[in-house]
Length: 73
Image (cartoon, rainbow, N blue to C red; front, top):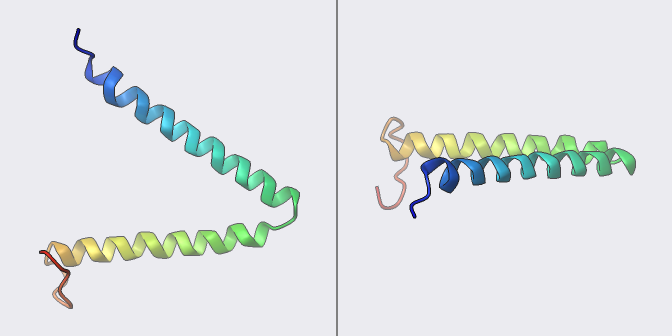
């Protein structure tokens, strides 16, 4: 019996996404409970930097940015 696309891919994706949201809320609660809210702000800066870095890498890989040469183009 074949499983539909929704059962194989969409439902597990939604479950993992919901789990990530719940874990994020739990971490946020713990940081506020122990009054370490500044750590969350620092993690936000680091996360934003990593997203921008991956975006620039993608632009380099597609040869939109010519500076540098990523391996295995």
